Image 1: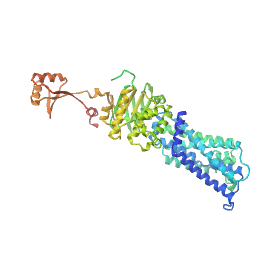
Image 2: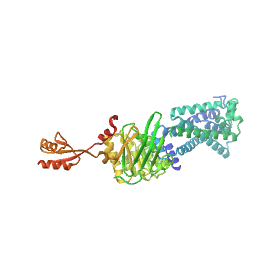
Image 3: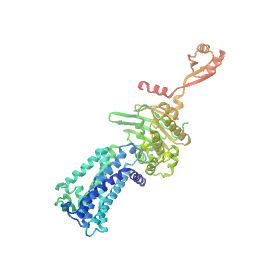
Image 4: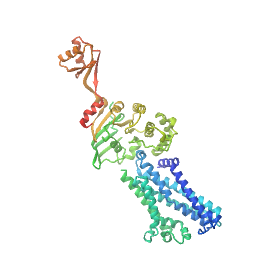
Length: 256
Length: 301
């Protein structure tokens, strides 16, 4: 297992994929931070509807924004697995280590850690801008620790769903389209009361609080208002198990 | 050359069906240990399916396959530790360098990086080890895949059409390496090809497969054997032919020699000497693998 983790880490490090996704994430998060933090601080009249945040709230908003970039773990997982299962690389890999579940776990670990690291870096960058451009107290180490494990939980889950989609579909374009559509409609679905209690987006939002609703006229994700942290954790983990189940099924059915 | 060791690979009643296609039809065969075996057959004969089944890439519909004494299926994860394989195309990361590709494989199989320089040297890729594989020719990729397959120092190497698509120089290079590997180590090497000449040059042992069935197996020597005819060179072809026909031996004149059908060359020598004719050459005619193959597969090819 350690060997597979080393191999996957080497592949992640040496290929363009992760670094390009990280650059896109940094760009999107940077633009959002400028729009929501920097401009209201430097020239509040430029965008009058945006509230001015205190530093702590601004940092929380950054954490929510970073975790909300679900495309990042999804595309990373799909392309990382897809780059192998759609090429002769997969046949070679499973003739070197035949147990497919080990390949899957290795990819889940590496992609999740990479997605988590990117997300935490994005949160950190945002927090730096918040510290520079807003007034008030920042957040303490305990809250950062909380952000870290909550972010890890959500990144593992979105990664597992990405791997599941790719293992089943065996076509990167279709799998990327499907997971992005899923992420979008799942978010919309979380507004529906019946579904809100099991919504992944709702649970993610509940984990980090629904600060965004305060400046969006109370319009928040349904589950966020109703779910306790414990329930949110259970819901997120349930989705992770579903994603892994799909991935294992996909590899078993398509690659006996 | 045959060994008495346990066969490296044993197929017992192996059938593989893909929807309406019967890729393997009750195959029984043994691949001897320590030899270079050629899987010979036309495209679609079942060679790649056999290899995929050996490596656990596809499950047999019926029958059992044993590799190095272990059963494919329950023991596949142990089998692959002792087998190096190139199935269909080389599975290389084109955006990584040759060295990184070998490092990825070494990590995957849990082998150290220690053999990487030696293997790069063996396949003559040391000088381009830090170039990306996407810039490699097909021959270079094939050689790198061979190094990749050898990383774990496997007891059994399975190479699916390794010469396919290589330019003539690339083919010569790879054949030399495979022959060197077969003769210098006690490894079992299995190579598939639809090219008769390649198998004839490379293999000690041949499995002829056609339409999912094993047509014949044996050593190249046994398969080619003697044709039961001799090429005889003499100064007076007409006189020699007359002497042989008088002795009841069939012969005909072919350009500069006599083609004589006989089971024993000494009979020809004795008859011609009795007629005062002394051959300058008397050579048994060996069959080509091509003629054997066509004979075995009948009109199908």
